[in-house]
Length: 96
Image (cartoon, rainbow, N blue to C red; front, side, top):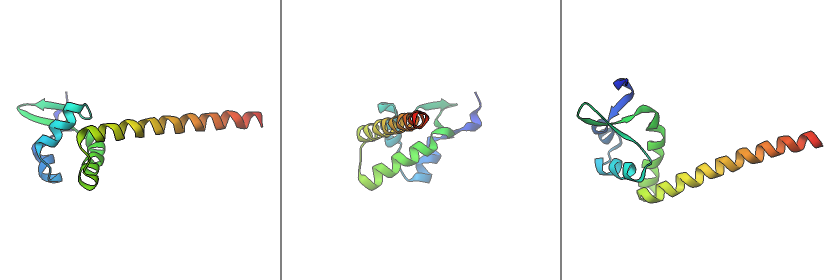
């Protein structure tokens, strides 16, 4: 496991000015996966974009971790439905 791809939560908390408890709540809900690298809880760098969206939802709209989970589930469903719609439109073009 490459540790260079993991960012310690302490650094993320300082950078984004959030408490460690916020990341713990996201982990409890299953939105992120906190890994322990050495003795430091860390987050994989691939999760940073999603975490930034979660922080914005939390700060700007005062949404809790459970609400963020609902929003992300709905966004995933909308994306899936949009992809299905695009595929159906392409198939429809074949018959026109």
